Image (cartoon, rainbow, N blue to C red; front, side):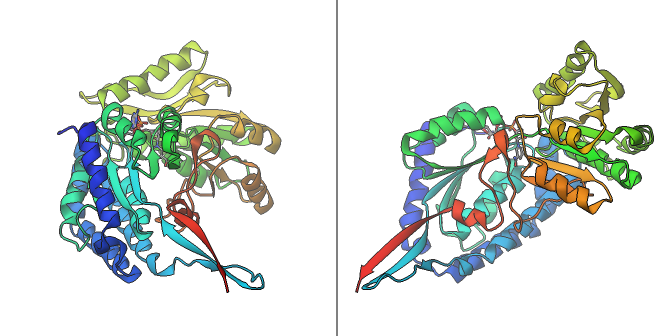
Length: 443
Ligand code: NAD
């Protein structure tokens, strides 16, 4: 894979700036921008099989999942195609002798830096709102999964999008990423990746006070009360930490179960975990493909020793004993306390800890006792308890009686605490990609 350098970043940012200032982009109507976003959705849809195939080849994700992620990206572009014609300014209460109004304008050049676990999906979450609001983009996909971003650039040539509005540059974090986050002509950074790199990015981007959106890591709780439909809760809990082989920012990797339901829930969860077939990601019966890279695999399996050394017990799963490949079985760790590394650190593999709790106060305290705050899933039939939990949990998304629903634009998504800054989607996203300008006219 070709790897760019600082000089390539300069060229890409200059191209994005030229496009931003060109009449071809800045002087078109909102309706024309909508049309281009719809065209992007159409070309992605027409090439969905190929795009999903590339993603499965690059990161090992089960084809059913990568195909879903492409469909989701199509939906995201269609969602944002509705925005350009609906972004309004404001008029302010009149001061005698003055007329005041507020314009909402694009920021300029947006750098989009993404992780490897949902390449096209994450790109769509950044490129679509950036274009809908009239910005231009330089996107750097993860060096591990750059193929769909490159194919995306090819496909854009089949739309009316002017040249230079979207630029893709491949390369490593330390080289291309670093040049982008420090670049004086980049106005906004939209980043999806680890909390460690997110913190670094915040510092490095401060030289010209770039606007920043950060979507970072998580260690999300799944909370099962004894009154829940335990079968549904077991199914949902398994999905929450096994989908994508657990390589998901919102993975429900800490499962809390009310003590009185522990035995039955554990039995049901074990049965669900056993249905997660692992193997060739192109085989339609496979639910979990291999992990994305050898380095990542080594890191994930190292947590089995981390757990044992702390006194925890791997009660299900563990190392794969079948054919060669970066496979990890659906794994459950018990005899865990919330302060153990296995309960606090993002493992990013098909590994969850199971911990019992006695009452609502205890489970709220345990759930919130983490540096992260991306998502939480609550299982109960008691409406009051469900809404009380939703209010008390420190998480950007709370899912009641479901393992996690990803909105393709309508609902805000992002993290509390060290899971991020800002939100993608929802109505807030328009503010994240625009600047307001106050105009005061003396009459
Ligand atoms: P990562 O932080 O290692 O890399 C993410 C991106 O940052 C890559 O493109 C990488 O090249 C780039 N990068 C690395 N060092 C950089 C630097 N010094 N300057 C600029 N860019 C740099 O993360 P990853 O391993 O690719 O992805 C996994 C992480 O992403 C997990 O923590 C996961 O939770 C998180 N994630 C979060 C969300 C969310 O929406 N909150 C979604 C998916 C993944």
